[in-house]
Image (cartoon, rainbow, N blue to C red; front, side):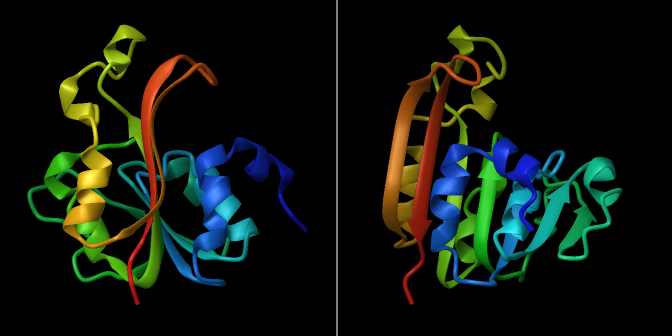
Amino acid sequence: MPNHEAIAEASPWVKRFATLIPPQGAVLDLACGSGRHSRYLVNAGFSVTAVDRDITVLASDNTPQITTQELDLELDTWPLKGRVFDGIVVSNYLYRPHLDQLPQMLAAGGVLIYETFAQGNEAFGKPSNPNFLLKTGELLALALRYGLKVVAYEDIYQDKPKPAMMQRICAVKAF
């Protein structure tokens, strides 16, 4: 039975493109926060590895299809080196020193679904630090560097759930 709360909380971008992830695939929810996307993906039939610096909220759920890992994603050494996933979901998180790790962690046919704040967001509040705002075309450039097929891309202003500048991509790694 679907968890309607998880479906309602998930980002429309993630919901739109999660169907491209290979069925019953292994998905990484990077910087998962409270786990809204992890819960949605489990309800969609995926097994999820949910990673964040603080996984307290999600770990208390005891959902067997979600493996939680408390990791500092901003160390000099990438803590997920050697891991491979059928899908990677990132929402509202950016740490450039490890951005190039993500396409390398995708299995053949794997899907990268990424959305976060972009330059110009400083006009609307936080985040306003340029270190946490994507530059124009930055996600497109990432996909190009690794030969990912771009399914969809946006670099837009959104007014809901709050005014913000957002950049989003869904890209697939070739077989």
